[in-house]
Length: 174
Figure 1 (cartoon, rainbow, N blue to C red):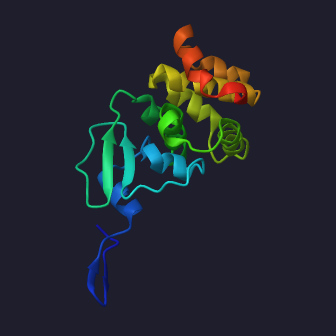
Figure 2 (spheres, rainbow, N blue to C red):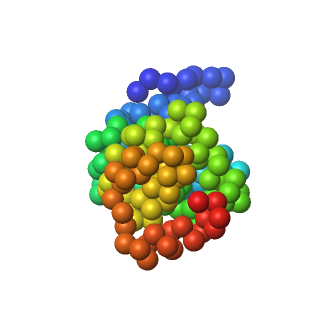
Figure 3 (cartoon, helix red, strand yellow):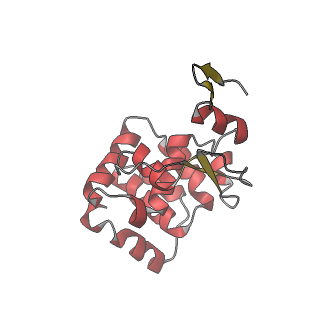
């Protein structure tokens, strides 16, 4: 693995992104938990270690990276999601525990990331097929709020109770 550096005090650890690329290559890999929310700028919390979701069996964790397996979420690979798109799906899944800004502010931040093209709405819609119901409900509402009705319709609709509870946290933001 490249990226090892020798400094005045000896060899340093390689950059985290190089280790992730080596141990968990390919699409559908990205931050989870507070790492995802921090990257999306809806939390100021910075975990001690990087938290990375992988759409397959997770490699062993390292001194500065914890990997989390998401093997049932294989549509992330098929849709070729980038790390930012994975971060959004993970933040939508863990909203109650990791998003610390008011719901309206978080919602607007997510909308801006999609509007600006930093996150690809069409890839998110395709990649959501194997996501939990509350993620699908929240992503569907997010795309609807952007006027992306055709893409929102591609997302499998969870049952009504799941949708209602998933969107309740958003209040009037959705």
